Image (cartoon, rainbow, N blue to C red; front, side, top):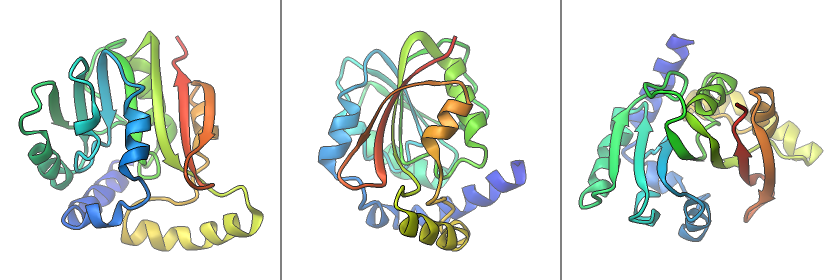
Amino acid sequence: MAATTEIIRRRYDRTSIFYDCMDWLINDEIRKKVIELAYGKVLEVGVGTGKNLKFYSPACEVTGIDFSPGMLKKARQRAKGLANVTLYEMDVQNLDFPDNTFDTVIGTCVFCTVPDPIKGFRELNRVCKPDGQMVFLEHVRSANQVLGILMDILNPLVVRVIGSNINRETVENMKKAGLHVETVETVGMEILKLIVAKPNK
């Protein structure tokens, strides 16, 4: 798994130069819808190039992590002047935070990339406070039979080129990790879901 993580890390370092041009699936309106749910001590996983950072309330204490140094370099540029944001290079599968640290966990199109998503979700469950919340915006495998099969066929190529899976069953993975999925809302298009969950303590 460590080898797989390193391969994907290198792919995202490579694409960090033009990643913002690829990130067309999430517009500012959708980002605001996600980020306005955050409160207290916030962990944003897969912070990427930092496009969410400007939308956090100044009242939030935001910790952002990403396993790609290239992505973090872009995020640090966006974080300049934001006193409430701290960024670290870190892998969601192995978080260097104590148990029950964060009130809110945020992730936008992250778990298509994590080599072991269930392990990642279990780590987030560990570091989220018992009365906290987890908010994810994720693209998932289509429920449409034809489109779902097409996504399955194309997935190996997309993973090889970019590093992300386009056919993940993310809601099911969250449940397998033990999270309490509260709401699943389709946002903008059929494969983009806003998912709110509670930790299992």
